[in-house]
Image (cartoon, helix red, strand yellow):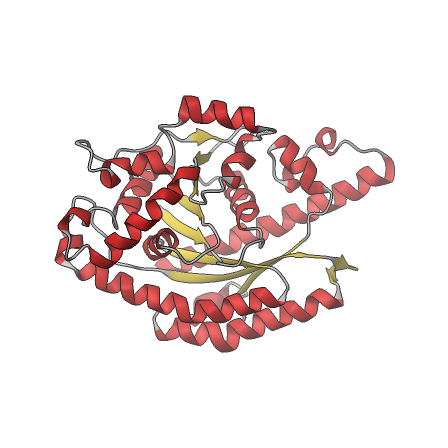
Length: 349
């Protein structure tokens, strides 16, 4: 079981959409996948379950409220006299092999406590079980249903929950969009990720955390690369205004992020990237804007690349254009999923 965090502390870069589409495609390719919604906004949970209004959300949390990421952590955070156990996951309609560990708005309430634990657990032993609890719960749930991949949808931000989830992941993908803020985020992550790596290394060696009921694991994070999305294509390529920012993102990764990650052993060996056709900018995929297909995708809780002609709800030239776009997105996500699988297999060789 491999845990992959999709993280960028810049919002609006399609992290949730990428988790949903990538998870679906990996399952389509025969993998068993668990998606974890760790964003208190719960957009992934809403996307998977196809909610159209507040009533459906209320019903889910009334009937399934004990089966969320937050509820699974409560034995540790509330010092309950029971152990953390696997959470009952949601099986995604229409895609066998794809599952969801649902999110919870109230997960944000645990952020402060986790932050204190990650700073003071050596001094306050009552907090020692908290830093390792997320890893324990996700592993237990994933192993319970026998998944190959865990995709973790993280919120935008640099809080304790994101620090923890990135640190306990095996791999990280950095979703971006072609704009100045994504370039700034890359520069910021060149400073943040090495600090998080240092903290995780130290935490895993602390006896109080290593010997806890939910041990904090030895970190093994490797950054796979970026996915650049939400650009307008022209004649099969990004329009020039977007290509300029794509080039700047690649340059920022190559000249600033990559050296910082290499210095902390947060990358795979260079030959593995090269064997998968990935250059120095670590660009895994370019995914164009979904445009009007996104509304159909949300309506039917189905990725744009799996929409049927009936779900596309169009005729004539409009339908033909929709089908062409759908098939192009299918090829893009198929290639991305295969590339990720090849990188991970290469790292084990």
